[in-house]
Image 1: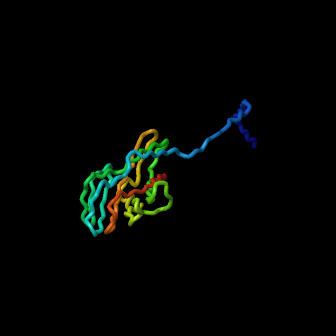
Image 2: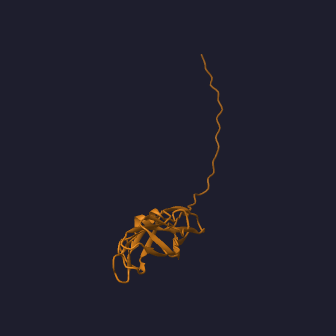
Image 3: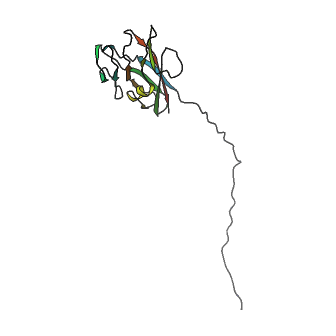
Length: 176
C-alpha cells in the first residue's frame, strides 16, 4: 500500500531595517503655588462690657465677611470688621488644604494663639483652630487662574483687658 501526502509549502523573505535608538527624558519639578496677602484680617473697633469676658466671630468660611457675631458677653461694634483675603495662583490643578498658625508678633514663630497690645497686658486669644473653622479650609485651584482664601476667626476677649490696639500675625500655609 502506498500513501501519498501532498501539501503546499511557501517561504518568504523578510527584510528589516537596522534598529534605531530613541532617547527618553522627563523633568520633574514641584508645583508653583503663590500666595499674596491682599487684605488684613480686622475685627474692627470693639467696646467690650467692663469686667466681662466676650467672644466674637467673624465668619469668612463662605466668602468675604464684615459682620461680627457675639457668642459670649456683650460687645459694641464701633468700626466694621473685615475678613482677611489672600490671592492664590497655581501652575497645577489641585485641591489645596489650608492651615493657619497665629503668632503674637509679626514675624514671630511658633503657635502662640494670641494677639498682644503695646502695654503687654493680657493678650486676646485667637487660635489657629478657630481661624480655620471660620475661614476657607480647602480650595480648588486651576492652572493660571486666581483663587481666593478668606480668613476669619473666633476672638476671645478676657475680662478687664486693657482698652488699646492688639495685633499679631496669621501664617497661612497651603498643601496639596
